[in-house]
Structures are given as structure tokens and as C-alpha cells.
Image (cartoon, rainbow, N blue to C red; front, side, top):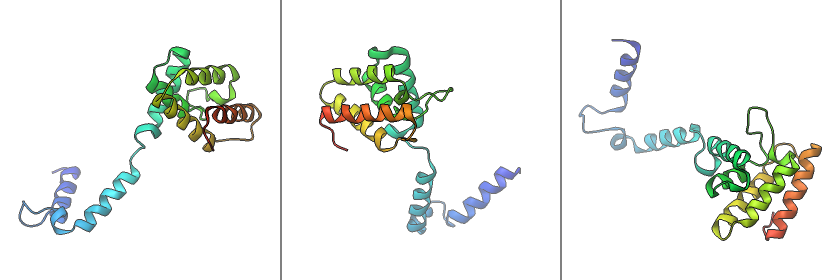
Amino acid sequence: MNDLEILREQLRRRFVAVRSSTSLAQTEPALLARLSAARQGLAAPRGRFSDARIAQGVMAFRIAGANTTYPELKYACYGVARPMDWEGRILLAEPRQLELLLATVRTQHGRPRAACCRGLLAAVAGAIDQTASPQQAGLIRLRNFLQEMGETQ
């Protein structure tokens, strides 16, 4: 038996009752709930807060520009204030890219526009460095855009 098999056997003995049909969920549900909560707390963020999805959205926007499809555009909005590429560039600090992003968001209608505005609002709230001069100008532009769109901060 190697170390992994020994550990597996010790865990099975500890968390599985004598009868094989009885598990930790049946013997100690509170412990199982705490273990599940800890596992979820340590897991990487999913959905709109996933760094991988946000990075893909920002890169898709950098490549496709105004032709970016809705899901990638939404994720790019969430990542507008974060360094998401290997060079550490931030869309918020690039006036031309920021204007293109805002113009593309403006062309969206209904739920896609609302989702993009929520992403931009989250980016404003969670901006990493609000004092850097290129980012500060972008934040001001972003706040003005959100006020135009009727989003509040």
C-alpha cells in the first residue's frame, strides 16, 4: 500500500460508519455541512466573478473590439479595472479602449445592457488603484457613463 491508499483507508474508517450504507451524512450531518462550507470557501470563484472568465472576456474584447459577443462583453465589463493580461494592462487606463467598450455597451439593449452596467458598476466599486492618474481619468469617465445610463453607485 502506498501513502495515498493508506490515507484513503484511514479517512474511510474515520468518516464511514461500520455498516457501509451509513455515511458521514447520516452519522454527523453538522460536520458534513461544515466540511462542505469550508470546501466551497476554498474553491475558486465561479460565474461572473471567475478570474478565468473575466480574463477571457477582456482578451476577447481586445481582439474583437466592437464585434465582441454579449457574454464576453459582460465579463470584459467586470474586468475593466483589473490587470488581466500578461503585460498588466488595464482597460480603464486606456482611453481609446475604454471609449470603445462604453460605445459597445451603449449598443446593447435590455438585459445584456443591464448586465454590462452591473459589471461596470462592480468594477468602479472594486477598482484596485483609484489614485493612479490614467485610471483616475478612466474612473471619472466610467462614473459619468453609468450616470448617463441611469445606474447609481
